[in-house]
Image (cartoon, rainbow over all chains, first blue to last red; front, side, top):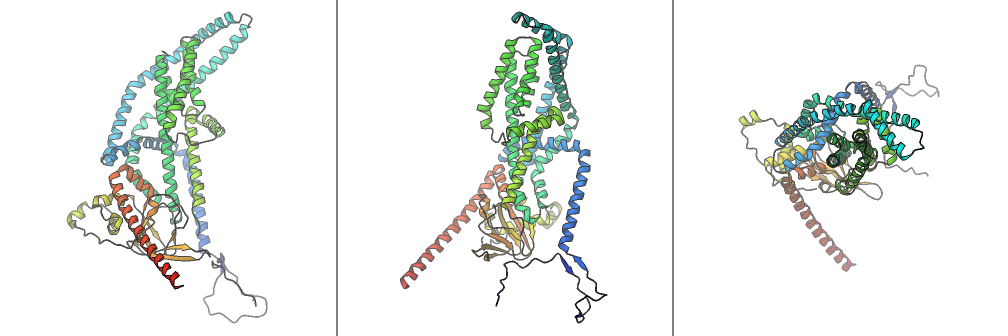
Length: 392
Length: 186
């Protein structure tokens, strides 16, 4: 006799089940064929219907997002700026809260202090920067270029008498013109981008205030909507993601500020004109791996060439920037945790090029942080899926 | 998993002032009254309990629904407000064995507040249950912001874990004594 073993789990119900007649069952007709008036009706399982409805809902939400995203980009960029500022200011608020100051008071104090510092910086820097940019554009006009070319031509003629100077002239002119035009365009775009954000500063400040004050209840309310099965995983992933990204962004900010400070100091000591503008630019550009230090040094070298034409100064600037990179790599970065999220160098170069082609200078600046956010998120989601049992 | 329940403190707020100034939702009040019953919070003032209430997540589980599975990374502890939860382990034949059934006011999973090591057992709702959870990321945040309150909680947690360790040691001693007696009989 065959024995049938029952499995641990009951057999899965079919998605389709025949509709039961409410009438009492009639004796079966044993003809082997269904009667002419017999109807086979299949009813969709509730579970399947629910899944289908959920699928349609997800598709509708995705379609709405695709339609909505281009229309709300300015709001999203403001929100992203607010989130970035919140990340930067949160440690200060936590520090004050740690000293028994209520969170609302700590947030107000930090924001007022930041606004004051911001206003003082704008008051001090905007006239200087605009003057520097204006005089820079004046200095880089055609006559200045002609002077540089003449100077370089003289140097070359003295050192290499056999050189065909007409061909060299043309090449130098073309190269310098494209370099100067590219640099000026980037500098203007960047400054305009900064200035156009100013009217939104009040709104961003409001966003930062509420994100700092109510960030935790907001996060709690958002996570409350996650189904039970994914709840613990979502909680842990959100926490790890926030922690890693905060450390990464704070690290980037600290390093950028340190490099900007060192660059301003070095350029001031070397008596390079517009030292402040170029130094700050170098600090910001330092966020871009590999390209950053070059992007930071090129304007300084160009300006040194335009103003003095001295190759010694150019050499001094190159040495100064190399020394700053060395200091950054040996003394600053190792003490700033999680500065890098270990992206492959090839991936870094590709994302920087993509960012640059999409959004110019801003795209290059944001490319690596955005790629890092995507990488951290993907890694954590994969970790969650591997470690949590997401189905019964 | 603790079965000790402290007596709930009596509410002494004036109904008039309570009504005028009361903005706290019923959910928050429910959470506070549950926390007051749990030994982990027995030495906390009302103000301190409110700090914890802000960190607590309230969840509803249907009968048979899994709260967490054995082997998953631990995130935090749960306290049963209403309902019943079975703490289970799967044996070698993959058959579920219930270790303990917990009821209102009892808590479980507290070791996950300390580290991310895998859960030693699964927790499954035996009835429709309302459960509140306190999770490690929120506790660590509290330790950064309010270290005194965080340490007060951790001290209480250490006391409870220590108490449980003493009980386990006594049980091991008893079992060893029983085993020795069995050897003599054999």
